[in-house]
Amino acid sequence: MDRRLLEEGLATIASSRERTGDLWHAHYGAGAIAAYFWVRENRLTALAAGSVTAEAKAMLRQHGTHISHTASPSERMPLEEAEARIADALEHTIGELHWVGHQVIYGAISLKAIRELEGWGTVEEIEQIAQLIESFERTIPGRSWVNTTVKEIRHMQLNENDNFPEILHPIQLSQFILEELGAFRTIYQAEAHHDLIGHMLTYGHALNMLYELGYQALFYKGIPPFLKMVKALRLSRDIDLTPEAATLQSPVDMLPLEQAERSRALPHELEYWLTDRRCRDWYGGHIFKFPFSFYHHAKHEEPIPEIWENFRYIIA
Image 1 (cartoon, one colour):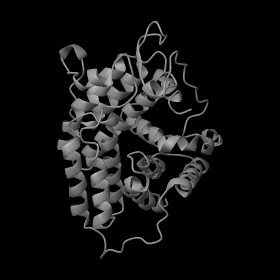
Image 2 (cartoon, one colour; image 1 turned 180 degrees about the vertical axis):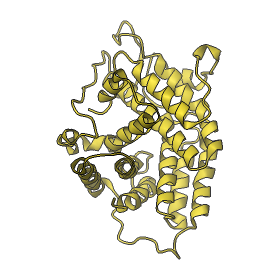
Image 3 (cartoon, rainbow, N blue to C red; image 1 turned 90 degrees about the vertical axis):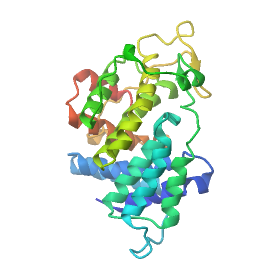
Image 4 (tube, rainbow, N blue to C red; image 1 turned 30 degrees about the vertical axis):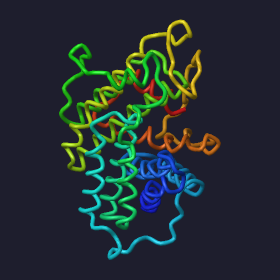
């Protein structure tokens, strides 16, 4: 494995706001880190693993921070201090639903990469990551929704009628997420549907990563806002999304929505990587993040065929 994917991925997350002025360029850094761990933690053929790594490197060449100097041990912020600063930033934001959980996704994958490297980053770089996470505070739950609005989600409450299971550890969360994915009759190609379902995978995976890294308190604090997103997603699960049957709040989607494209191959197969992923800009790094998260959940419970089938509509 090429640990430069971790180093450049972290550098890209750290520098994203300074480079672009927004929250989203960090997607590419998170995608590179996801590619590293997805290959390392799953049994791929040598050709498939090489293709994943090559695509992640190509993405970083186009969108990454091209680091010419890696901080020496004397320049690095001590591992424990770096983790504490990022965890503190998460503590301030993880209790609410902000931008479908991206602050949790960025924070968890950064902590996982820093732990893998046994320390990374100067004080300034760690502070940049922490400030990126903190900048999500008081932001909206997300911009695109079916059959609900941002205002309604902000005031949404969880209750017994939701029939959510008690979630005390990652295995339970993964089982729950796979069941929710399998419950969709149709997955539509829209930010308000396909993309949101994909982020259910990554948001939940980020919570599991925090638990596995020893941040159980953050895991538990993050469950209610995650379930709020799932509750909102359920409003789009059992209907035909026609202009007469659905409402849509989105600056990018339009009714009627079309069914998402189905992927013939799965990401652990070489055939999947023979498609030109660059023409779609690696889907902003999600081409690595969605598989990384789905296969993590699948390790906890072998998905039934219907769940694998729905996953194909997430990763085409």
